[in-house]
Amino acid sequence: DAGITQSPRHKVTETGTPVTLRCHQTENHRYMYWYRQDPGHGLRLIHYSYGVKDTDKGEVSDGYSVSRSKTEDFLLTLESATSSQTSVYFCAISPTSRTNYEQYFGPGTRLTVT
Amino acid sequence: DAKTTQPPSMDCAEGRAANLPCNHSTISGNEYVYWYRQIHSQGPQYIIHGLKNNETNEMASLIITEDRKSSTLILPHATLRDTAVYYCIVRVNSGGGADGLTFGKGTHLIIQP
Image: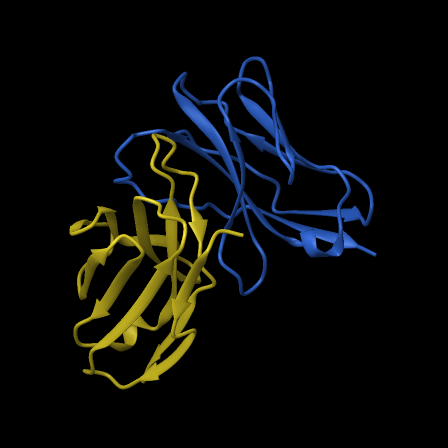
């Protein structure tokens, strides 16, 4: 299995509080992604990174920000959590190649916003 | 991206080969076929991908028809741990990583003991 960890694995937080999720990889892959997965909506891309300090928005980026100060870490921040951000969040990584849909996923973080 | 069609569910006996079909009749020449699976409560797992030729790795084999309008994922000796939802995806390799993965409904494969 690819070396990807996510922390925390589970979190319950209150509406309006900031939340940061961490993705850590040991594979030295260039590309990193944050997705959310919800029943009825499937998998949706939030943000992605194509290198240190290089990030861009995905399909559902509103209310989220990201940072990547080191190759191995990609942080996702919910600036002011809302109930609509209750979801399972997955981090994924991809090797440095043109085959960018070969992605390896972390175990996920289950976030509940009350 | 070309649309894919998969059966909603399939059963397979443990130890037998599981053959999962995918129809992608509108696939274009530069689109790859990818397969992923998701075991309940886990992250999606990459299985295999191919363009024209058949591919094999330690997990599975991918058979793509000569006209590329359909493909079959083969798990040669299915185990109970292969019970999962399997997704067939057709994508152009963009070289930029700008597009995320999107899964359709997939095939729920149930391995029977």
